[in-house]
Amino acid sequence: MKKISIYYGSTTGTCEALASMIANSLGVANENVHNVTDMTKEDLESSDVLVLGSSTWGCGDLQDDWYDGVDILKTANLSGKKVALFACGDCESYSDTFCEAMTHIHDALANSGCTFIGKVPTSDYTFTSSTAVEGDQFIGLALDDVNESDKSEARIANWAKQIKEEIT
Image (cartoon, rainbow, N blue to C red; front, side):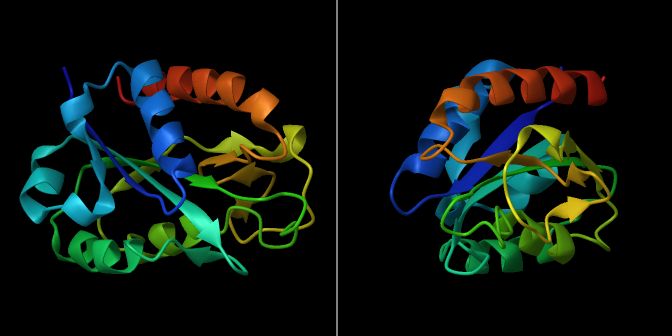
């Protein structure tokens, strides 16, 4: 079985709670779910699949703890690893930068040799624009657990099923 490690950055607890829901849907044990502040190069390199999530702050910024996390990611050998991204955002107040935090992580890993998985169609979302969109898909799972909390559980379940298929 492939080792999946989940890392999240959460200031208010929303992203942490969603990371826990994602872990449950993927069947990932609690000891493999980490705050990004606990990220180590060694754990990254010992994992087969990385699930990386951040809340989005301001006008599309990463959650503060992720800035050091990105530096650690850049030092790790991620060649051959599969990486799935998720982000929390506010599709009403920040409709024009919705879930852009995952763009920062994606761009930091662009030349790492990893393979990104878990793209999600934008068709079920209401937002104006986002750098986290390529074509008609988000580069990962976009979640708004404030304005669209009624959709989070189904979105996570569908995404987890997709991730499981993409890592086999």
